[in-house]
Structures are given as C-alpha cells and as structure tokens.
Length: 355
Image (cartoon, rainbow, N blue to C red; front, side, top):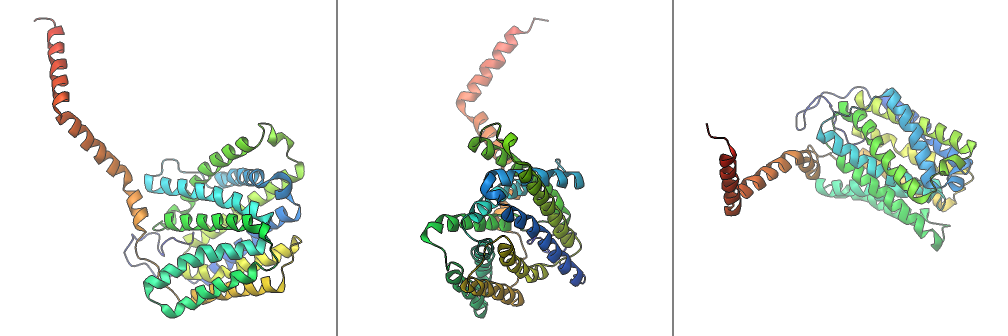
C-alpha cells in the first residue's frame, strides 16, 4: 500500500534499514498494474457495466475476488483494533471507489477518469505536503496537473457533470485510504487487505438488494459472470503482487515513480474499449504524467508520524474504557445512588435468615 512506512519491522519514528534494490520491485508493480487493467478493459469492451449496472458489476467482481483472496490469504479476524478500524475504513471507501468509478465509466472515458482522479486525489494531497515542506518551486507540478483538467474535459458536454461528481467520490475515497493507512506496518498489509473485503462485501450486498430485486443474481448473464470472475481474479492477483512488493521493501518514491504508467495504460485501455480521446485529451494526460514524474523527482518528504486522526483512533478503545469508568464513578458518587445502594443493602440484610 502506498502509504506504509519504509521498514515494517521498525517502529514509527525509528530509523529504517537501507532500502533493497528497487528495479525488480518497480517491474513487479508495473506488471501488477497491467494485470489489473486487463480486467477493466474486459468490462468496458463487453459493455458489462452498462448491461448489468455499476453496483451489480462491482458486487460480482468483489465476490469472486474476495473468494480468491481469502483462499490465498486467510483473514485474521482476531487482529487488534488498530488493524480492524483501518480495514473497516478501507472497506467502506473501496465501495465508494468501486461503484463511483464504474458508474463514471458509463459517462466519461476511462483514461479521463484515472487522470482526473489522480489530480483531485493524489496530487491534491501532494500539494499540501509541498506547502508543509516549504518547497515553493515544486508547486509548478500541481499547476501542471490543474492545467490538465481543461484539456481532459475537451469533448465532454454539460451532461457529463454527473461523471465529474463520481470522479470526485473516487478522489475522496483515495484521501480516506491515504489517511487511514498512515503508520501501517508492512506485516499488516495483507491482513488489512483481507479484512477490508468483509465490510466491502456487506455494504455491496446491502446496496445491491436495496436497488435490485432479490432474484437479480439469477438473471445475470453467463458472459457477465465470466467477465466479472476474470476481473475479480485479476484484481486480486494485482493486489497480491503490489503487496508482495511492499513487503519486500518497495519504497514510496519508487511506487510513485511507477504510477504514471497507470494513467498511460488507462488511456490506451480506453482506446481498446472503443473510447478514442481527442488530441487535447492526450495533451492533458501528458501534463498529468509530467506532473507525476516531476513531483516524484522532487522527493517531497513523507511525514515521520501517522496522522493525528489515525493516532487518535488507535487509542480509542482505552479512551472509551476510561470514559465508562469515569461515568460509573460519577454515578456511584451521586446522593441518589448512595441512598438506593443503602436501601438495597438493608433489604438484603433483612432477607438473610438469622443465625
């Protein structure tokens, strides 16, 4: 995951060991991106999303992907609260990202979706990091990304505003993911990924049966089942490949340096699915990729500590326990409660048989 610390064995704030050679790990991430994109291309090429709907497509893909993932990596249900709340948050944001992205694919070209999601998601977060690091010269890259928006929307009509709203939800899901994964150790990567599928499946099931008839699954075409099964399996394989790279020592800088490949693949994938971008769209994608490369080479430092929100939630159960103890002590100290306890004690003493 892109926001884990450099050394999973080291505690937060401690110096990490030297990073291993990154060449093979970068190639592994690029291969994972290609594998994941194949599943998206199949859904677009066979019009699975338009025929079955974004919720049904997301449900089928996640159902198969979760089954494959849990066969390969057994979920650790006894994990502690810091892991569980991150899994719940990632599971909820994954539902938003899955459904919103697939709904947007029916309105906006796929390459435009990935580029705009990067601009409003990762690049927006990077802008705040640049400001905090006082690297004013590096603000040129967020400006590049902002300028790309005007080129990426070329050829889109006012009716596509819904698509932009959905892209905003995808970017919001990214920010949730970035916040809750701060401070996550490498050995917890697969644990969180497997546990996050549980809330994802629960929420998608609720959304599906609130929008569809109970027997909707019986009417799904065989082609949709096959496409979603392939997509779910490929998505899980891509996830395991990226997680394996993190566990072997992939650095945040290397991961960020590889990510421009994803936007380039998305533009090509859209063409394979019959979505042909204009020259202005290609220019916008070029600006996005240039911004990604530039901000990666700027080497903006990551925070040494997890976000305050993550730290606060990690210590939530002890806080709740202390709060309950304070409430109990306060209630017991009130005059009315003392009178009640005294009365109960007298009644019990009278009920005891005399010795």
